[in-house]
Image (cartoon, rainbow over the protein chains, first blue to last red):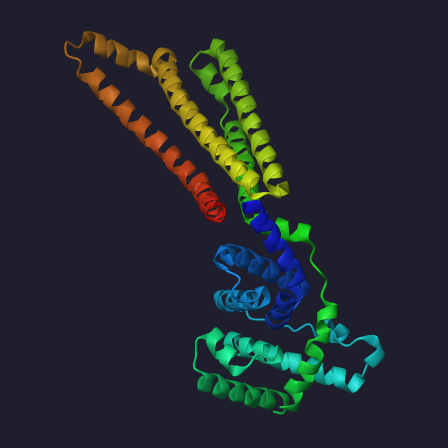
Length: 164
Length: 212
C-alpha cells in the first residue's frame, strides 16, 4: 500500500518536475543551489503527499507546496544571491529563433527579477504561469485586490530596476 | 509591462532546458535525510575512536604500570585493549553496513526496518561503551589499591584505626567520582548520538504516517 503511494508520488513528480525546475530558476542561481532547492522541495512534497487528496491536479498542488518551500527556505537563509550567473540563461532560447537583442533583454529581466523579494518572486512566478488573480490571491492568502495592487507594484519596481 | 510579457513568452519554452531528474534520483532524494544522519553516526564513531586512540597514545599506561611495579599487568591490559578495539571496530563496520543499506533502499518498509536496526545498533554501542568505562574505572581503583605505593601508607593507617571511618571516606569518594565520571560520559554520548537518534526517530515517525 505505502509502496504504491511512493511509486505514484515518484511517477507524478517526474512527470511534473518542470514546474519545480521553474521555481528553482526564479529563486536560485547556479546549478548547485538549483539542485539543493529541488531536493528540498521534493522532500517537502513527499511529506505533504498523504494530505494530497487528488481534488486538484497534482501540478497545481505541487506548485503551491513548492512555492511555500522556496519562500520559507529563502527567508531562513541570510545569504542573498549576490552574484548572478549571467551566462546561465543563455540556453533559454532555442537555436532556430536565436535573437541576440531579445536574449539580452531576457537576461536583464532575470537579473531584475532576482532583486525582488521572496513573495514578489512568487507573484512573478504565478504571473508567468498565467494564473488568474483569484488563484494568486488564494495561494498567497491575500485578497484579490491586494494581489492586483502587489503585481502592479512589482511591475513598477522591475521598470525602475531596468531603467534607473 | 512589455518586458515581463517578453519573459512570459519564453517562459514555457524554458522547460526544454531543464535537465530532467529520473525516478531513481527522486527515490534517492526521499531517503537522503535518513542516510545522511546514518552517515554522521558513522563519521562520529570513527572520530571518537581516533580521539580515544590519540589520548591513549599521549598517556603512556606502560610507564604508569612500571612506576607502580605492576609490569605483570601490562599483558592483561593489552588483551583488554585489543578486545575493546575489536568490538568497537565491529560496531563501526555495522554502522557502515547500515549506512550502505539505508542509502540504497528504495522501499519505505525496508527503510523503516533499517532505521530501527540502526537505532538498535547505536544503543548497543553506547551501552557497551558505558559498561566498559564503568568497568575500567573499577579496575583502575583496584589496581591503584593493590599496587600503588601511596596506598600502602593508607592501608596501614586503616589497619590501626578501630573504626571504619577512613574506609567509609574512601568508598564515598570513589562512589562519587565514579558517578561523576560515568555521568559525564553518559552525557557525552547522549549529546553526540542522542541528537542524531532523535532526528532518525522523527524521520521514522514521518514514514510511519505514510505507511497506513
